Figure (spheres, rainbow, N blue to C red):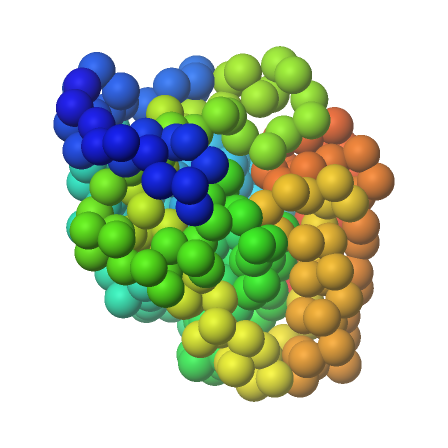
Amino acid sequence: MSALRPIDALKGRSLTFDVGDRAGLVGRGDPSPISTDGDPTKPALLAFHGFAGTPLEVKMLTDVAARLGLAARAPRLTGHTDDVRDLMNAGWSDWASDAKKALFDLRRAPTGKAIVGGLSLGALLATHLAATEPESVAGLVVLANAAWLRMSSYRLPLGLLERLGLFHNRFYLPKDGADIRDPEAKSAHRTYQLNPVRSAIEVLRAGRAVRAEIPEVRCPTLIIHGQLDRVCPVDNARRFAQRIGSVDVRVRIMPGSAHIVTLDVDRDDVDREIEIFVRRVSGV
């Protein structure tokens, strides 16, 4: 592996240009898109995974839909292949296009509506749909929303890197695992061993864009966040709820969980909250 000398601003991390044998996913489970059929007369459920993740992160949502007899989809976002190098060239416009196409495909059902949800970056995509395609969205599930990021998120000083523009941000930095408190879930989590800096900065910029759209959301909304989230501050839940245009909003903070709240120690409570919400909004 070739690397440039570390710079002080990156706290000794190497700037990696040759990913070598670290290009692939680590963790366990099938990272393929999820698709299940259900009652065509009821709203379907559409779920989006987070940055550098896979549909496994939002399988909880599709499982809830399946239990309730609803159709569900969880696509794999552009660039999120089995090789991290493909993610370097993906960005918000690609992911927003993925989300809109997935929603339009589901809208073919007689109801013409879907419940949308997502984790982190996926929560931004779901919010974007709820704000810009309100006639197609029956409800919104916001998990660990990334509308605001910590000073150092995804283990990267994103704001600093954005300002520096070093090598046009086309390099990788090593990851030290997902932000999950449960050790077994952390070990199993499907993700990459490296962070592509350019596309990570795209998440930062996407958050700024979606913050301006939150007041346009009018549908019923469930907001869930982990108290111990080290990527997106727990205060994101309050700020999101304060800005939203909907009057039907429920906020739940999971006390023992970190960022990947669907897989962490409070996952049973998260599952229960999502099922109650989906059941109410879908009318099943």
